[in-house]
Length: 318
Length: 318
Image 1 (cartoon, chains in turn green, purple):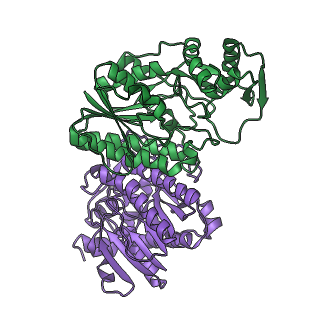
Image 2 (cartoon, helix red, strand yellow; image 1 turned 90 degrees about the vertical axis):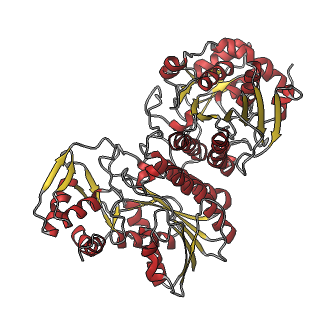
C-alpha cells in the first residue's frame, strides 16, 4: 500500500512509518515540525519507500498522488504546562489539527477511496469515573478546562470520522491510544514516565505528587504500533482502545525505576499539582483482544531497558 | 453596534435579528438556507438596519465590512430522524458548521476586535445523569452515537471559543440554549412540543412514548432571546445556561395542550422509540439569575397561546 502518515516525524508517527516500511509498504510522511522532530525520521531519508513533505495538514488539502491509506497522527500531545510544545500552549493549533486536519485528511481518504485511521486518545475519557475504561464509556471531560483543547478536538475528530464512514462510506478506523513510552518520546512531555526516568538517570530524587497512590498504565511503543497495524488491517470501524492494562501506582513505578537504574537518591513527596491530572486511567482491552487478537507483550522492566539508552543519549550521558 | 448573525434566517436567528434591530443596532444576516427559511426574515427585507447575504460560513471567510459583534447561530438543530433537515441527515454539514463555521466566525471577530457570542446547546450534556444540569457538569455524550454530530460539534465549538478568548483575548460569550418554542419554529423538528401541538390542532390523538413520565422544560422564544441579549451586553465569558427550569412530564404537557386547544381526541401511548432521546433535561439557571439578572417570564399557557396562531397558519387552519 501507499500510505500517508500525518505527524510522521512525531514519536508514534515515526515508529509507525518504520513498521509499515518494514512490512513492504510505501510511506508518504507529512509533518509541520511544530512538535515533531526531523531527528525522528532522519534514518528514513533516502529510503526508496519513504518520501517526506513539510506540511501543515490543518491549512489546506495536499494531494501527493494516489493513496491506499491515510493515517492521521498529527497533533500536539504533551500535557506538560511548562513545555512550549504542550497542547495547553498551542491551543488553537491543537484544535485545528483535530478538526480541520481531520476534515482535510478524511477528504483525502474519500477522494482516493483509501482506508483512513484516526489516532485518538484516552484523553477523550477525561478524568474518568468508570474504571477500567470501556470504549462505550462517555467520559468525563470538562469542556471549559485547559485540557479541553486536546480532549474535545479528539472527540470531535472521532465523531467526524464516523460521520464520513456512515455518510460517505469511507473505510475508517479509530484507535484510542493510552499512555505510551519508548525511544523517541519527548523527554519534556510532562508525563510521569519521562519525568521520573530522567530524574533517576541524573541521580536525582524522584518527584512524586501527593502520596503516589494515583495510578498509571504504560504501554511500550512496539506493542502499541503492533495494535495499530492490526487495526489498520482489520475491518473494525468503531473505536478500539490500545494500551497496557497493567496498572500500577506512581509510587510502585518510582521504586521500580530507582531499582532498575540503580538510583540511590530516593523519592521526594510534594503536594499534588494544581493542574487537574487524571487520578487513574486504564484501558479495558477486551475489544482489542477479541477483534484484533492483540495484547501487549513487553513488560515494564523490558520496555524500560529498551528505552534507557535513548534517554541517556538525549541527556548526554551516553 | 453593527452585528453579524449567522443562521439569521433560522428560528432563533430571526428573532434575535428582530430584537437587536428594535434596540437600535444594525444587523448583517447570513444564512445558507440549508435549514433556515427566507420566510423568517422576509419582514426585515428593505429595512435600513438589516442587510442579508446568502452564504455558507463553513466554507470560507466572509468580510462584510466593520463589525462590532459576531453571533454564531448557524447549524442544523432538528433531532427528528424523519426530517431531511435533521442533523442526523446532515451530519457533515452539522460538524462543519460547528467546527469550521466557529473557526471562521471567531476569526472574523478577532480581525474586527468584535464581541463574539456562540449559540451552544443543552445537547452538550448528552443524556445527563445529573439533574438539573449546572454549567460545570461534564455531560454524558456518546461520541459514537448518531446525535454526536451535533453534540460533539458544539462541545468543540465551546472549547475553541474559550481558546480564542484565552489565547487571543477575543471578547467571547457562550450561551447553552435549552428547549425553546414559539412562532417560526420548525413544525417538523421532531421535538415533543411541535409534534403534540400539531396533532392537537389537527384534532388527532396525541402520541406519547412509553408512559409519558419522561420530562421536558420548554422556554418561550422571547424569554430566551432576552437572556441572550443580556449575555451579549454582559462581561461573562464562561458558558451560561438559558432555558426554562419548570419541568413537567410529557403526559402533563400533553394534557395541558389538549385542554388549551379543546382537542377531544385524547392520548395514544406507544412504545418508547429506539432513538435514544434524553429522558430528562432541565437547566440550572442560577448563573443566569446571578450574572444576568435573567429568568423566564412567559408561562407555558401564555407561550402556547402566542404560538398557536403560527401553527394554525402553517397547517392551513387560519
